[in-house]
Image (cartoon, rainbow, N blue to C red; front, side, top):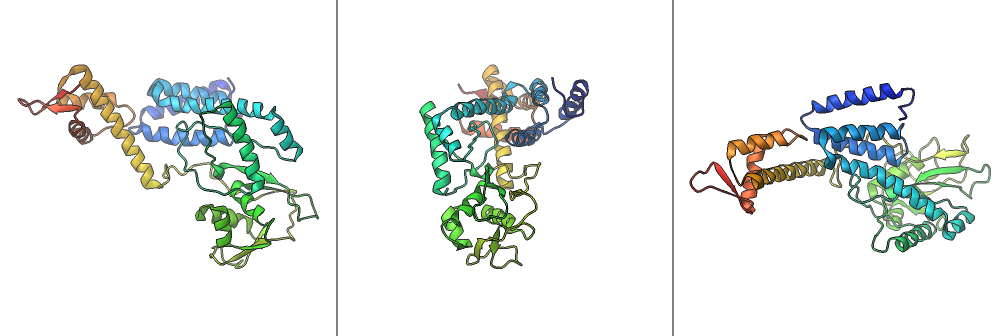
Length: 352
């Protein structure tokens, strides 16, 4: 097994064991798993993990403590990356890809399985014909191979390297994200556009559009000139145009907004922090429901106090409070999974 950079195999194993010991002391293990899932996704997609062997060893240790079902989704993420790599190798062997290379375009995509990865909303984005053509070619290849599958593009996570043709002083290469590339290509057709026109033409969410434009209007390496250069905000009628006198000492210039190496775990869903909290709450309810039903299905009848005590023993991903379990029992009664004994109201009966 390869260890972490500058750390041998034995020390890597000791560090992972220390993390697992800390994990075993947590009352809210599900929060840890949610955080770990987000971090792992970030490392896998951005190819910034230091040791694949160490990552897989960590999963094995988590599986011992949490069980197969909890860690299965994490393992599937590794599987997706391997399958996606093989799929891209197949695509690169096609004549379609060879034609793309002949046109000066090197295309790559990560194909991930929905449900295995942290949920991300598919934000709208209208691609220019130059980019749309290449995504359609890959979709055609994919649908010929998998006829009953569909692709949902998450352009927010993509990046490109493009060569500007309007600058002749130096053969620059601009590293941009997909949103920035879509905006820059609009100026192939119009020399000047308002922020409102850019938004309408691209359909990029306003917050994402502002963030992407802000980095291209940076005074230190601006490639887009905004009308009100002294103000960081964009107004609907504000005009933007390409800065034709662009200069930079580097040949390759990065305009991609700096991505935090720590994902915002409060925003676990499209609705932000509130959605993340709601998702966690719903997952906990489902776990408690499943444990109560499993116990009652095996025993047919059980006293309330004993049932609550057994649920608390069997739920190991968080520390369920007795009042939470009582609420889930009442919910199961309302949904006809259980009923109270007529002679003893503290006893529950399982309804098959």
